[in-house]
Image 1 (spheres, rainbow over the protein chains, first blue to last red):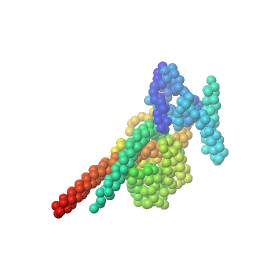
Image 2 (image 1 turned 180 degrees about the horizontal axis):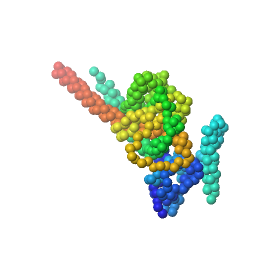
Image 3 (image 1 turned 120 degrees about the vertical axis):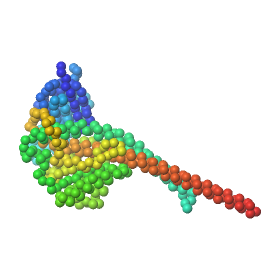
Amino acid sequence: MATFHFELVSPDRISFSGQVDQVDVPGAEGDFGVLAGHAPLIALLRPGIMTVTAGGEQIKLVVLGGFAEVGPDGLTVLADAATAIDDFDRAALRSQIAEMELRVKEVDVDSALDRQIAKLDHFKALDQHLEGTAMH
Amino acid sequence: MASLKDMRVRLASTKATQKITKAMQMVAASKLRRAQAAAEAARPYAERMEKVLSNIASTVADINSAPRLLAGTGSDQVHLAVVCTAERGLCGAFNSSIVRLARERINSLIGQGKTVKILCVGRKGADQLRRQYSSQIIEVIELRVKTLGFEHAEQVSRKLIELYEKGEFDVATLFFSRFKSVISQIPTALQIIPPVFEAKPDGAPSAVYDYEPEDTDILTELLPRNVAVQVFRAILENAASEQGARMSAMDNATRNAGEMIRKQTITYNRTRQAMITKELIEIISGAEAL
């Protein structure tokens, strides 16, 4: 299987860099998989789980928003925060959700509110998903 | 002439000072390593971000429909200078050189009849600018933290975007010191709102990207983030520069103290010998008189 270059960059470091077979990315408008030779694409991310397949092994990472760029030289994901799923601090996520729920009440009704609610929903969905994977 | 005791006290104090500067130099050296690593780790993100953004910006067909953070307000009457400096002194010309660059820019803008507002990140720059421009400083943000995180940059950028959306300024320029090496830090001015992209070399075919969602949606998301990323990069570069500047300043101070100690020791020993000789002469001539 053809591989391609994948880089995961967060503001303070490069979290992952190397050749991979496939990356499943949580895009803002739905998940999408990237294989070698994907068409050039720039997509926003929603908070979710990213799956990296390299050499038959799967790595799962939690990303909290950012964007992905597929170019001729591979896939680059610029993530706000990226953590391996086992290291992810779910208590911190929960407290962030609680904080956001409080904040949503203060926002005026306009597109900013829509964005806040959408973000909150993504966080909740992520939390539920993690709940599911933790039990298995 | 100072007595022997005075000289001893003075020598001891110079030695104590040397110990302090030596310790500060070593602390700066170890902090520098961390700060430098952080600054270098932040570069890829900022560079990628800039690349992607300039790619999108160049494909936006109608610049007037683009978000204001990209297109600007259409005027350049009110400028905002964001001056990033250190929280502490004793780091050579680090703070002064950033302030000097900012002051030159501010004066030339005022000379052109523009209005200039100042936002200080870091206490030292604010202290220096307050003397001349106290009425123009709109806010001072202090970053008294052990490790600089992205959230600090976001705090600054939220403030900037809030001010921009209220129409408080048209153009924002970031002043900071770029870390080149331990002995060389370059004061830099970088316009961040609206962002300026380097012109692409002609004929370089840029890949045609699909956007998901629409490119304008991506831009509204990316532009505020870009401000935060640029600020983050600036404060990290600044942190590394500050430690580098302090390290070389303290190295100099230690060397100067060593030089002073050498001179003072020589004078002290000479004086001591002179006194011994004088006492001997007194004793001998006293004995001869008997």
